[in-house]
Image (tube, rainbow over all chains, first blue to last red; front, side, top):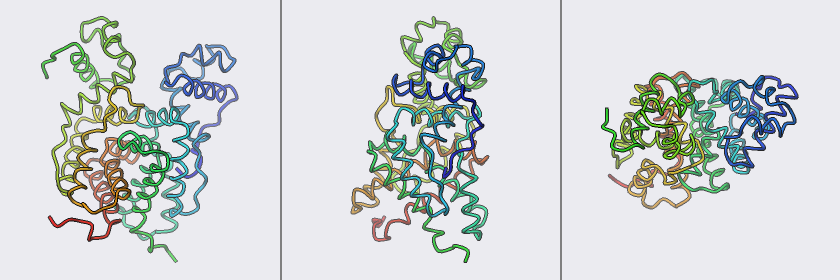
Length: 191
Length: 188
């Protein structure tokens, strides 16, 4: 993702609920926080939480989308060749807020429950089609898929968990991999 | 079906059965307790939180349904990953559980996955003179492109089938390996 994810406009109450929930997740170290506690933190009635987010999955999906659009928002990239820089920044941001990063990561992997695992896909396609329009369908798909995958919190989770990497190493390896994906198309920019 | 040997495994086996008709989120401890024929309390004793249950269920599914074929060379590695992605396509509900479990904060199992060690061992043999930073960059990239997360993202976010996902995986591996000079690779 290279620009804030399109999030449906939130009411003040909804934003208060999501902010309260995110704050509690960081304090408790788990997304297992009761609606009663969320309501108290947001200064609203418990039934207001239920009315806005009838199920826990609804609340998690909204929270993850809100986090990606606020705490983890990317600076806009104007070129597909800027994406590695955006990825480097994003990894550092995830590393600064690990509990929230895990919530976003798990929510994106909920499968058929309405999660959007590649929110930045449209932006990547727009940049790639504008700069390197000569790719065939399979090449184009492979570049977009690889960059979408790397430009996600899953990268931070995997590099940290499987390789014990710290913030600097994760940012380096993720950006390096993105540069590798771009190597093949580096000199194929439309004049 | 497997013969459950203990309560912990019986719970996982029943959860796997329930996964065929509903998502993990819809498997409450109450429903699970009824399915196994034990009390909810017993499940809590084995799996204090849903994150513990998810991690254990994913490990069990991994071992029983998606065993990783052993690999030593890069081409064996590609073949092993292709086989896994195809297996994921035949049991998507199980593969989603694996993708999701690999995204949560580690609970019980903080050891790196077997495939991570296997990739590192493969690089030790294939590129013995490669410096440590580049070795980790390559290993981490290969690991991430061979993950259940990659399969899940391409299936749900891009509507791709296993064949197309294998193609995207091969191209990603090519780009990563092409980063290194040819002389890096040991003669087979």
